[in-house]
Amino acid sequence: MKQQSTVAAISTPLGVGGIGIIRISGPDALTVAARVFRPVGARRLEDAPGYTALLGRVFDAAGEIDDAIATVFRAPRSYTGEDVAELSCHGGLYLLRRTLRAVLAAGAQPAGPGEFTKRAFLNGKLGLTQAEAVMDLIAAQGDQAARSALSARDGALFARIRAVNGGLLELAAHLSAWVDYPDDEIPEITGEEIGAALRRARDGLAGLLSTYDLGRVIREGVETAIVGRPNVGKSTLMNLLAGYQRSIVTDIPGTTRDVVEDTVNLDGAILRLADTAGLRDTDDEVESVGVALARRRLETAGLVLAVFDSSDPLTGEDRALIESLRGRPAVAVINKTDLPRRIDLAWVSERIPHTVQVSAKAGQGMRELSAAVNEVLGLHRLDGGAALLANERQRLCAQRAAAAVDEAISTLDDSFTFDAVGVCIDEAIAALLELTGERASEAVVNEVFARFCVGK
Ligand SMILES: Nc1nc2c(c(=O)[nH]1)N(C=O)[C@@H](CNc1ccc(C(=O)N[C@@H](CCC(=O)O)C(=O)O)cc1)CN2
Ligand SMILES: Nc1nc2c(ncn2[C@@H]2O[C@H](COP(=O)(O)OP(=O)(O)OP(=O)(O)O)[C@@H](O)[C@H]2O)c(=O)[nH]1
Ligand SMILES: [Mg+2]
Image 1 (tube, rainbow, N blue to C red):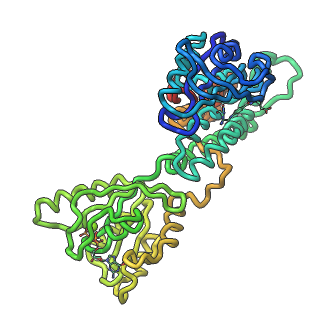
Image 2: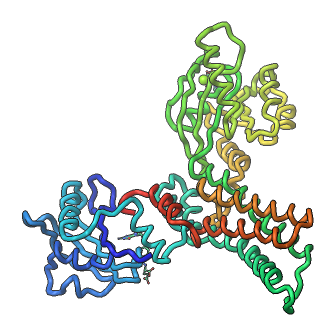
Image 3: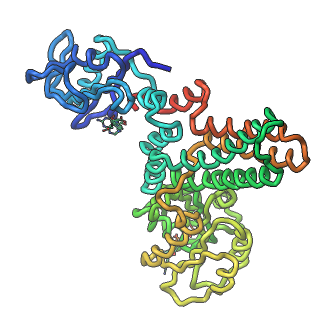
């Protein structure tokens, strides 16, 4: 799929900055650039070798626009694999737009969303999961999201998928040889061997699919509900985590009514916090609406910070909350440990494995809290190089492959022909090749890159 057109776009943010870059890629990139760029020295842009820079000025029909540096890349040694010229101008929106207009007038087409990276993909510079990782890298909000995107960009996910697919391809080759040339001297493959290989693939895919939720947590953060009965210090904890006075704190039980939200980064874990109204039965109409909102947040949260008052014995409301959290991702936060303890700590920690003691008012115990949160979310196990499924497209492909492998296994168990097993294996392989982009339809590829920004 050779690209014949030459495209251009502003590749830096559309705002004021020190420098802004117009990127031009395609067979005519250097001649187009040379039409708007005049070097100050004697060297001509069209003759410049790859990976060199020239100082000059950019012009349009109306005259000089700006000082600029032109950077020359020659195919195939460029981001896209095509000839590329970059014009680094001053980063003003007017300057960049006017320069882009001049470049378009000189013969380039406007680049679509993600078009540079799409060309890199089509020219074999990047796999599809690697191209998606470039986008995730741009979108990363935290250290862990950036690290996992980097490792995907470096091919960690690709390698992991290839490992599964390699086993399936080998199996398919065996089966088709056996089916097509039953009389030849092909070492026979037994049902047991096929079964073992299929189970290996199934386990590999299950492992891959299990990374998806973790990936979402580090990219988007986790919905976290701060709950507990009134006055235990939920809002004080919220404010401590947020680093400023986000929520109203008073010693009057029933202070918080609305859900108060903020996003914080707790040692690499991005938490989308919701401070909620204290859980209790109340006749106050406004408060009871708040309590209903709190209960809904409690039900849907991906992580619960259940707060208790260390200086008070457990109440029925506390116990009911604890019981409802069994098996859920939750941390019991025993607050007000600066006061004499009257709570039955063992009762809590027997039921909620991650129990930490803090004083939100004094700012104590935060290290323990963040360690517990990271553990509950499974982030402590995450090493930088881990390969994670990064988006819904990838998850659906992996799921399709897993379903096809499952079907192959049950077809084998029901002792249908190897033929029928082979059909299921081919289906799994097709799903995995779509996942890596090694064999993806144009529609799939277009959809992936349509989500990118212009200039990338
Ligand atoms: N100015 C500028 N900065 C940028 C980019 C860019 O396109 N331009 N990038 C764009 O996203 C990223 C860097 N990514 C890049 C990846 C590969 C190549 C490249 O030229 N690869 C060649 C040559 C490698 C060599 O041998 O030195 C190749 O793969 O053949 C360039 C940029 C981030 N910073
Ligand atoms: N001694 C002590 N007091 C605390 C601590 N944390 C909170 N408090 C106090 O407890 C009272 C209630 O705090 P809030 O943060 O408003 O409690 P809440 O759980 O949000 O209460 P509601 O919004 O009414 O449900 C305030 O007077 C706080 O100053 C703590 O760690 N130690
Ligand atoms: Mg409150």
